[in-house]
Structures are given as structure tokens and as C-alpha cells.
Image (cartoon, rainbow, N blue to C red; front, side, top):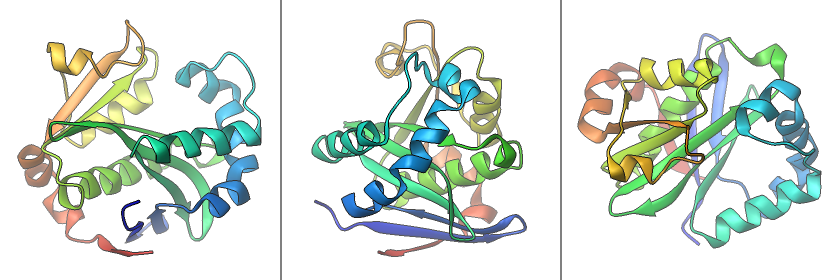
Length: 194
């Protein structure tokens, strides 16, 4: 297992923290994550048709760890608001996915900020050259998040290999474009060990 990392960002909407969790931390937060996954709008946009139980969240994280994914818990002012991960690492690329769980914290810019934090980690700490994101067509909020950060729709064969479902829209961004478009915000991030 690689050293677990932490990313901090002091913003107008609060102190944001993205941290790579231990399995104990996953178990501690599994019920809240399950609530977020099962929130009807989130479930639809994530393609879940059946309720997800806390023990399934724990199993999902265990699978990600075994597949060398880099999952993160997302906190605002110390309170869990969602999660995100980089997965499918291959040839200097990976897929990124995230969820801001409770409807009362959605639409406040947290998704964009956390997506920036995890992408910055991917490029700076994990050495990626490109990041892909697979978005269901009706998930306009996630698509806007990625487009704000400079991602573009990518229909290449490689990009399509990151599509979670055949009709998903795949967006991607390379390191240079990301760093140029977001330099001022990236400079505010603090990276460190757990």
C-alpha cells in the first residue's frame, strides 16, 4: 500500500480535506456514505438500482484498495460530505469519480473544489498525464464541474474504454491543460501525509 495522503484547502465555503482513509475510517463513515449513494437523485446519476448497505460500502473500498485505486473521503470543516477516487490506472492515465452525498450540501461548489483537489493529487502526487471522467448524460451538474476545470468531451477509443456505461459521456484533461487552467487554486492546496 502506498503512503496514504491528505489534501487541505482553506476556502470561502470552509476547510476542505480530502484524505485517503484507513479501513477503520471507511467502516466509521460507511453508513453516511451509504445514505449518500442511496439518495434517490444520486442513485439515479450513479446507476444504482438497489439500495447499498454500509457493509457493501466497506466491501467496495476493500475492492478499490486491492485494485490499487486511490479513494478519498471528502470533508468540509471535519464533516464527511462525500467521496471520490482515482481508479483504472494504466499508462499514465486513470479515471476519476466523485459524489457529494447530501442534497443540502450539493450545488455549493464543493464538487468543483474537491474534483480540483483530487485531480491535482493525480497529476502532482500520482504522476498521471491524463485523467478521464465517465458521466451519465443526465448528470449535467457533474459535467459542469469537469468543464469548469478544463475537461473536454473525449470520444477517442482510449477515452471510451473508461466509460462506465455505453451511453456515458467521457471527458478528459491532460496535466498541462489542468495546471494552466487552475494554477491559482492549485497553489492554495496543501499536500501531506496522513
